[in-house]
Length: 310
Image 1 (spheres, one colour):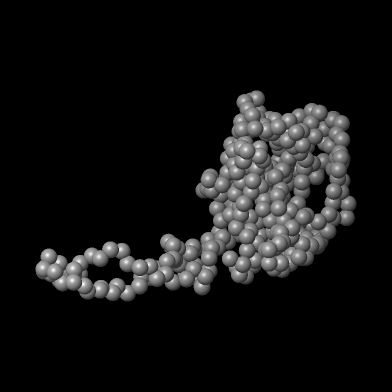
Image 2 (cartoon, rainbow, N blue to C red):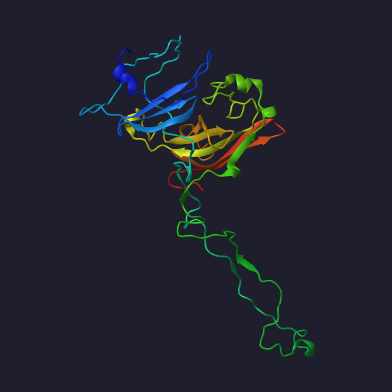
């Protein structure tokens, strides 16, 4: 504070601030790439901005300073400085060229597991006094008379076959069919009260449209698997603690996405049937609403990293 030269270098990443409103600000630093991200109320507004300290290489934070540059009273609460346990999960980035999102590879059955093609038993015609009658001994142009469907020897209902198995191993995408719609009427007051902030970064209530015009908008939730590609520098053993999980994002305009966090960690998954030791992985999680129980239900594809559980 007081350094006017430094003030001129400051960049405003959000120009509108309300009075008497709590804001949640996250600054995440990547020491390996010397870049940082800033999220406001869990909406990522600043991406991969570089910072440098001359010829010195920064590796840690020694102190944190909080200051205001305008005549205003500001309160700070719940200040945390430490390792990031989000495993690098980020929500979709909507660009003019389309949706940009780092998704893990989705697989299917291995080629060795899908078996061969469907086969039939060899046809065997049996002669009798009926088949020798003149009515059945006519010239059919060399075509064998149809005796009905054959006897299936092996049936395989796998419709698609590739060198990798029953599907091509491609990175996951943001599919509209995977979105869960939560209407205004379907949101309880308890959920609203537990929201991190009722006033989002665009000046509107978290359950209003992003324009802040007071129009109630339905929210759409997306759930997807996430693989942690961060190294041990984040303070966790990625082979044991933070292999990945199911992340969630929400939006009401399909442009601005709020990071709802990790819903389920792979570390919390166990094999209660065979007692197989992990680590386990999840693919293609889906969530639907059960009208009978009034609860949301998630189901998914579960396997170990070697794809041996089936």
